Image (tube, rainbow, N blue to C red; front, side, top):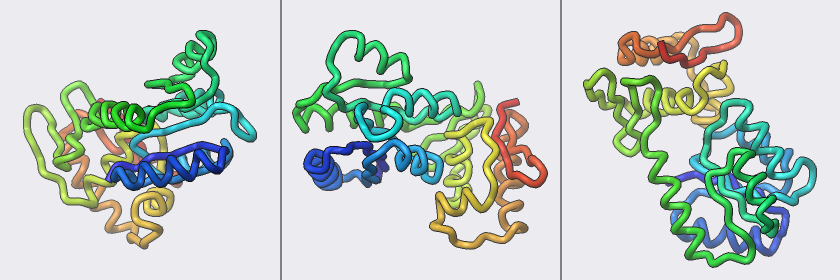
Length: 216
């Protein structure tokens, strides 16, 4: 089930979007201000961001700029009443993948969501390494490897945040609802994934902080 982060402070519109998107088969995390959105984006993995612009605190344009500066490449679609050419330009310069002006037709939003999510079916880790998300499969140097669920989830999380240092605790909170995984078990997962990556990319240990995924 694709996971969406919805930033919308209008309670009536937010509730409508939440209900319609859940009915369409999406998991929706609905937040009402940019602080909550930034915290959710760091804590959880989302397949797509739906951001209003004029929200309490930091506006949606600025929030997305900060996420992009932090190497967060999650597709983002602005839903906003700001409809001038200058607004449109600012939205795309902030890192948006699409821009939909209010009021909009829900059917149009769903069409655009499906188009954006199709592009997320693969994650490129290195020039000859990619993760096929729907199949939970790693393709490395023209070899295909079917990954066990937890190995796939761990690699997928790091692949969305290439270059970021992520510790075991933060990853477990994001992926496994805080379920405990021993350090030894986690190291086994990392060792297996590095073996699959065959030197084309590597999960590198940063002592005392966690691991980061780097193409080699």
